[in-house]
Length: 475
Image 1 (cartoon, helix red, strand yellow):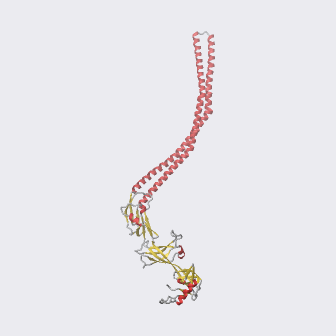
Image 2 (cartoon, helix red, strand yellow):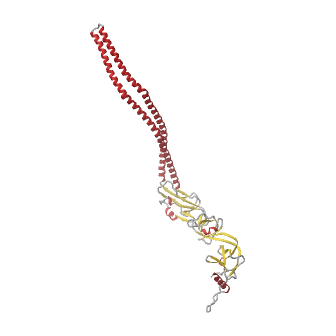
Image 3 (spheres, one colour):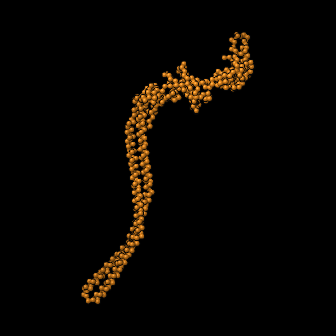
């Protein structure tokens, strides 16, 4: 079918169309041309729709780290106005001075708390040492008292009590002997009855007193042995146990209490540091309420990223003197003179571009003007749209051109030298296969093509240098 179509085209090219009977003669068809296949150079150009972007732009925002009160626009530079580096472009009124004063008091309080905690820790360390030494002394002393009582005092008092009883018993024996002797003596001597009676009577009373004292001594001795000494022993033993327990408590709890004091002191220091940071942030926020131009340029409301503006309408509405505003609504940008162009490179065209290629930039708004530029290296990763960002460095400086305007960009992508070239119209394509017709042949020749600049196309296989091929006439 293809061969018949090509043959028919060739006949038409040679002889023209036949005129049917009864019809007027048609205008003669343009005749096909022939082209000799030759080697040449091919300059590939890639066209892009671009967007002007700033060469040098500085976003200006109001970033507050501590202040959360009301903000009011006191002074603002006009949208689109020229500014110099250091000029005030926005001044905001606030109640930040009251918060700074409050933060200053909080720092003073935190300093006092930290100092108190540190002093308490120092005193606690000394107190723990003294308490431990006192508990150790008390435990040692009570243990020694118990030991002495058990080994010395208690046995001595037992013996002393027994000796008291024995002493009274001995006294009774002595008194009885003495009484017996008196009675014998008075019976043998010639004394008046009155004198004898007095002496014997006294001796007998003395004996009765000693007998009574013996009974009392026995009772006291019994109480001493059965009650007083055991009670004293129990008391000393309990004191020793209590002292040992107190020592253990001090030994176990003092380190834990010291840790608590250390933690409290550390927390006080952390709180002090946090209060100081808060005060520093508040003071920095006060400085941030006065925004200045970071460089010479034009002030714009909103932000511009890759030529796309955002937040401009909101900022224009919000940034008016006397209006309440939030810090997040402050979106400004200072743009210096000079514009480059951003383009998006499709993945299929990525192999055609690289850094340093020549480019021509034509603003859509001013098509009669053009600037030259050079390409930057395309981005390593594709964006959300699947294209790769690339920048054309042109440094365009024109008063009526601003970031965000569109431009047509032609990049001189690749120059191919010494390859077989044929006119692009000479190649036809059907079902994914490409063909040319050689001069004088009635059937097409299949070819394999390479790159094209739109006018000429590279031939990789199918024809040779010097072959003549048919180029269909322009319709």
